[in-house]
Image (cartoon, rainbow, N blue to C red; front, side, top):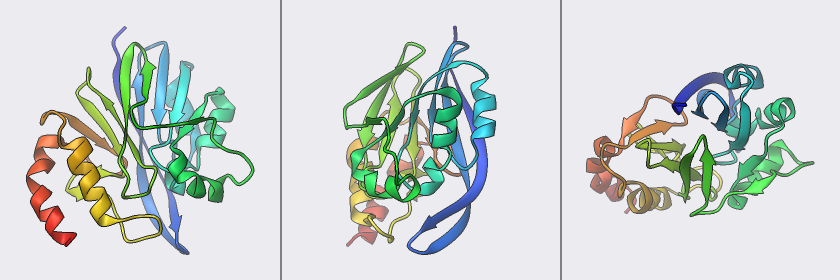
Amino acid sequence: MTIRVEKVVTSGIFSLDGEDFDVENNIWLIGDDSEVLVVDAAHDAAPIVEAVAGRTLVGIVCTHGHNDHINAVGDLSDAVKAPIYLHPGDRMLWDVVYPEVGPDRELADGDTLTVAGTRLEVLNTPGHSPGCCCLYAPDLGVLFSGDTLFNGGPGATGRSYSDYATIVESIADRLLSLPEDTVVHTGHGDDTTIGAEAPSLAEWRSRAT
């Protein structure tokens, strides 16, 4: 069976440092007709359950712990009985949303997840938050970047637990070494490619000095 990448978009509120923002989030599903993995269950579990469409859900990966990327994982996991993955560096953010229960499994740099026979490599890319992770599928030529890299540059910093210089170096060290034609599926907004973003590295670094 052919593996495919599907996208669900949901809307809701991102809350941090006492401020609320209206946001749209990209939720990514990687799988075939039998099994699937979800990246970032945001805002509303119902359309994600619909997209899973009865397939075996092998896991729900949280690219980081901001509420707008995890606030539907509890309902989704309850509906489909799948383990939730989060890097421990973002546990303090998780605990704001789910103070009574932790994620099921920890993500670590260098981990490998498998869905429908396809390998996903975990890349820890701190900066937007300490535990930010991206998932790289070399056989698909695809990177799921969460809020680390967007169409147009690095993810937002300047709030609690974030640091601009750190995110730029995470992108430089971990992401820009990937093939230029790697498609970047982001946590918000449009796709991009590694090749489209790489020429801006010097500019990004200049802002960090």
